Length: 192
Image (cartoon, rainbow, N blue to C red):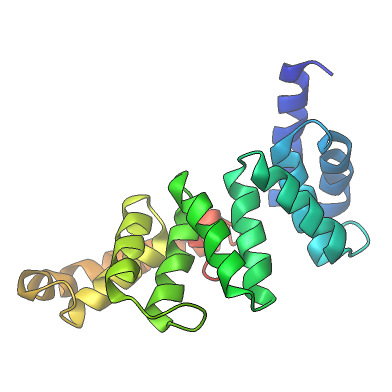
């Protein structure tokens, strides 16, 4: 298949996924998965949840790993999320770190939560703050909201504490607008 045609089919499948036409999207992602790492990642996502195809978490993990090792940040995020649900903190952080290094804002947001709570790694407020700031800079809506929240708590200094009340409302409105428009938008992916 020609690269341009493959990309057009992939974009079509993403649109079908956005419209929750899971069976059609799964069929296209499956067909493209041998030659397109993004399709492999999203087909794994559908398999893991049993959306539009028979649920198969084992095959989903194989697809995630294959695409993640080839450098797909979305597959790295999905693999990190799968390890999070399996309570495998070391692998979870490893794959989130790889995705975040490639600019994946939801991975940065999840790392913020992981380092802030200290549930699977040693609690580290500096790393949490770094990942939260980077996710917010990349436009992650929950990160933008949380930066304002932690500013209100005084975590970012006294100047931020004075500015925070004026920034919280617009951040919350952006989150609500995004959720109403596109509930599956990766910019508002909250947890792994």
